[in-house]
Image (cartoon, rainbow, N blue to C red; front, side, top):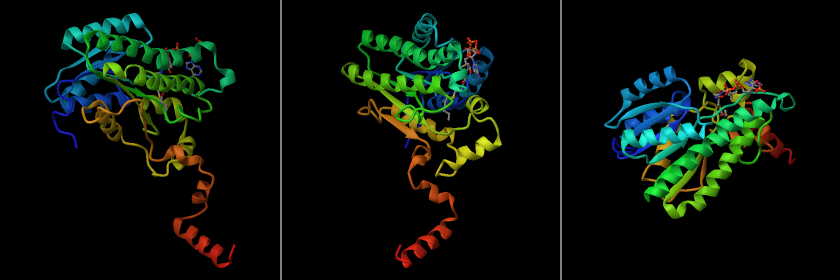
Length: 286
Ligand code: HXC
């Protein structure tokens, strides 16, 4: 589906691109011809990530910028540095996030604010700056926001700040997709389900018992592979998707469907046992 020049001519900033899903996307974009800029708070991590991305690179340039997305002023400097280093910026992936497990009644206002600042204000800061740049230049561009499967309709217990922040990011995606379509700016979102990354797992999956429960909710029977997510991100950022905007694509092996009323039956036995049981019910006429 993709060729070495699928993203040629693009310069994409990935926030939080020093690790996890951000790094996986950065590597994929670089392998498909894009210039890649990553930003994050920890220089060592960014430096190591650039070395990894360089290993995959096909033609484009790679740079890192030490920055906290919570600072509008710093992100303005970063955008200017990117434009000076690469000559342009064509895409933005709002990937930087913060999250931790907490009973909501025990959350401090500072804890709520820290996560919402990173997730919602961070995404707003970068989107507002990049959107203005594109509008001033009369240039088209694409923005991809990483949300979650609990942004849309359910929210989620024990991760209140993240649920609130990500729901806001999804609202921003749709609001601006309409408002900025006239400028040729596309905004889409990806809602990843369970993709094991060090940052998320150490904060969100406390032990083996939690991991077992978590896996049992995924009908695909496995976690997602970062490569699968990077492929989806590439498609949405590429010239293959010029008419897709305001969309949120879920990639979760079916996890979000686990609330289906009779799904629990699947856990009562093997598929063969269940089929026999259903046959028995039918024969009895019940
Ligand atoms: C309760 C906590 C806490 C915890 C921090 N706080 N950790 N409260 N439980 N585990 C509170 C602090 O007490 C403080 O409140 C406030 O939050 C800010 O904490 P700091 O450590 O000073 O802030 P900061 O260094 O900015 O850290 C931000 C952070 C941290 C969000 C708290 O976890 C972080 O930097 N995370 C980035 C990486 C990350 O979280 N990745 C996972 C994303 S996964 P006071 O009141 O003292 O000010 C994701 C996808 C979800 O989003 C889907 C997965 C399936």
